[in-house]
Image 1 (tube, rainbow, N blue to C red):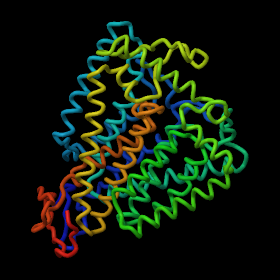
Image 2: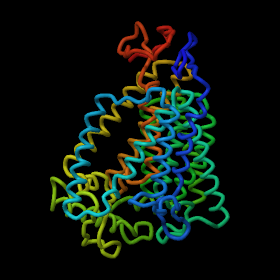
Image 3: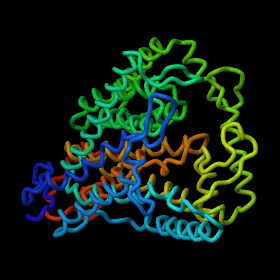
Image 4: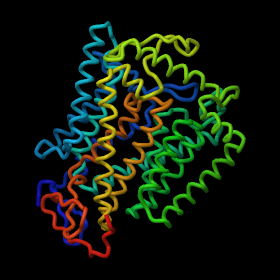
Amino acid sequence: MTGGQLAVPVSGRLDVRNRGDIRLRLIPVLLCLPVLFMFEFSAFTAQTTSRLYSTDVGGGFRLIDVLIMGLTALQLMITRRTRLSIRFPTSLAFPLALATGAWAISLAYGKLTGGTHLMFDWRSIVLGVAISLITAAGVRSRRDSAIVLDTVLILSAAFSVFVLAAFAAGGGVRTGPTGRIPLWDQHALTVLSFSPVLAVARWLTQAPRRRLALLCSIPCFAVVVLSSRRNNWGELLCGLGLLLLLDGGVRRRFHALGLVAVLMAVVTVVLGPARLASRVESMDPNAYGTPESATNAGHVGDVLDAWDAVKTSPWLGIGQGKPYRTSRIVDWKTESWMVHNAPLHVWIRYGLLGLIAFFWWHAAYFRYLNRLRRRWRVFREDGARETSALLLATLCWSVGVFIVAMFFSEWSYTSLQRMTLIGTLWGLTLHRSVRRVPPVPGSIGVSTSRPAVGAVVTPLPPADIPAP
């Protein structure tokens, strides 16, 4: 077929037949990826923000906003003759509609009650949605998806090698409680934690290019662990732990555990056992009196101040565009725009309706990813294994970030660095080439949804199909 449609030949391997514009369509997608490591917030002395965030172009818009919206317009021009390859399932459309309603109410309420910086909290969400549209319009097949994911891996590895080289040469970020570390930026570290999760997912599913993923993930893993950020440790460990619970045979799981154990041993030698142990012990919110736990009291006070703000307006929150006063952390900040706890942050900004939409959306999206993952896992072709690895990695990494955000971590959707990766994964996992799972005639418990247009599927022998 022509016009960028998908075709699966008898061998079961995916092919793409188009008008030769595949590289042109992927250019806007790939141009968005460097934003992953453009620092949005400054930290101490060795990390500065990108000028793309600080340059104001008028009307409250930054240069980075204009560039991403320009890439969105460019992508729509390139693909103007083809359909947008993203469709929302009904299970996701309802929580999305509820979230949109909560956002509109919070925006109006904030405006009526004196809010001024009305775009502060949700600007990155809009840009992330734009990036998901860019990705969905540019990616037409699993081969395109592999190009995007491999680019994320290589870009993350190159950034990590640069950070580690600077750290080895005496650079890095100097902090009070943890000493010198390679990187402080929590958002970049969250992005880096995706690479080890994707690498282990490819290993467990025996997907193509798993050795490339493992090679690229090693420096990313080292940066995340050496940076001693407890939230990022939690995100990485939750993601890897969930991977080992959900997929892979016993042998492959032992291989993955062995690799992680070797890397942790190397990191322990570099950090020093005493420092590593004290940092782990500081994860207890009640731990005080050591340099590693110096910020614990501030985080607890931050959450308590946010809870006071919620109690003053439990239905609508405080709305958009204004801070709330603090009383327990005045040495840190006398007024706060953000709390290091995702549910409280959503409740303060978007009210009770937004909090319901927040949990509903994540539960629906995780269920969507898990159902698709289980359906693709039935097939043994390389393309199916690659899709299964993508869904598995996205599910486990997203759940890990979500779990950590329930405690003392920032809301992920405030950061454009995180939203760039989240938006890219939205575009890849909601793409029609992922949603249309070929049927397996004669199998029980496997969906027989309509395959992609022009698909011809040869089922595997019954002996190769695991029990549902």
